Image 1 (cartoon, rainbow, N blue to C red):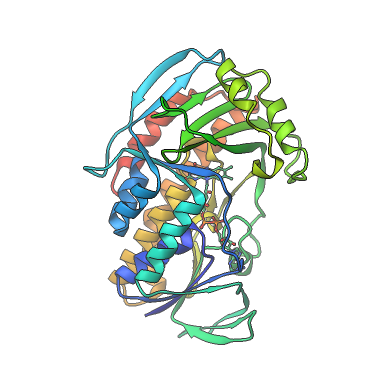
Image 2: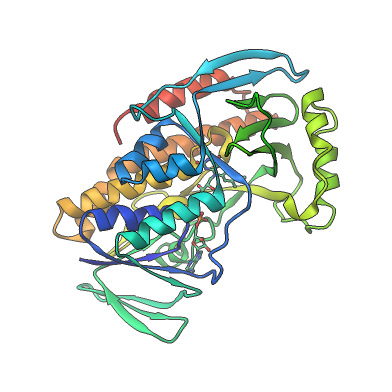
Length: 368
Ligand SMILES: Cc1cc2nc3c(=O)[nH]c(=O)nc-3n(C[C@H](O)[C@H](O)[C@H](O)COP(=O)(O)OP(=O)(O)OC[C@H]3O[C@@H](n4cnc5c(N)ncnc54)[C@H](O)[C@@H]3O)c2cc1C
């Protein structure tokens, strides 16, 4: 089998690795010629560490990030309320990993190439025609090619999704945005720290040297903001937070270092494929980050898709089996995360974060 993956993000790259493990030939196209990613970090929980272990790249991944085994909850005034140990799902490895997105991209990109997949940068598909027996494509660099199947891993604004399901609603703005900034890791920083309050704040270690701060705020519209002035705006958002956060905030001075993202969701209702073309990751199910599972769901998708492709002769049968295994968990993450988001804005019942996280762990600890 020969597969084309559209999108060289976390979902596309892990799909390429998982399919190569099943001896499927893979080409990845990524529209960004620089293959750049946001400069801040990402947190990944025990089910994701287990999934990366299954992908066969766990040591490179752990070495590139920072392992930690607990989550700490703080009151808005900065008082430590609880330190909750995290369950381990990959024996011998940390429960959770914090990792800089560029470091994760490097590990995944090297993993893809080492396993013999081809990566074409600065390329998009300009035409996709499912002929029944093959999918014929034209690319933005003028080349043409045919594949047995196509995986649309092109993220929240997926063009593959628009092509497959033109009737699907566009991404919906969730009413909140996240501000992120890298800081030097303090020596006592050995857990994910969360501060709940009118403004939600978190600190996550991502290497021995670095951690990042994320701040969740209600914002009137879902537009991106100009980069100029973002540092002052982020400091202003945390002005009423715990003293430790305000103190760290004094280091937020570089506009270019602030990553500001309004939060949108997508959940494709019904099948994630048509014919020989299937969606994966944010293209099918983009969540708000309240449960820290968006990329984790994409990585789990990749393993399941590759397993089902190895099991079934026809891609369509594999896609249906993949959807049946993944839709319940991914829908749960999108819907529970959105419930937390809405509760924080007074638009729904407030959700107790400790209980929500414990319930989520029970779900994601199940085999994928
Ligand atoms: C503020 C915020 C914080 C988050 N924090 C976490 C967290 O802590 N933990 C976690 O697990 N998840 C987190 N997430 C979610 C996570 O970032 C996403 O779920 C994850 O990046 C999805 O990966 P993806 O590969 O599906 O999509 P993307 O990461 O969006 O990758 C898509 C790729 O496709 C490329 N592309 C797009 N269109 C085309 C095209 N037409 N042709 C070719 N290439 C194309 C893009 O350039 C990109 O490289 C967070 C999300 C947000 C917004």
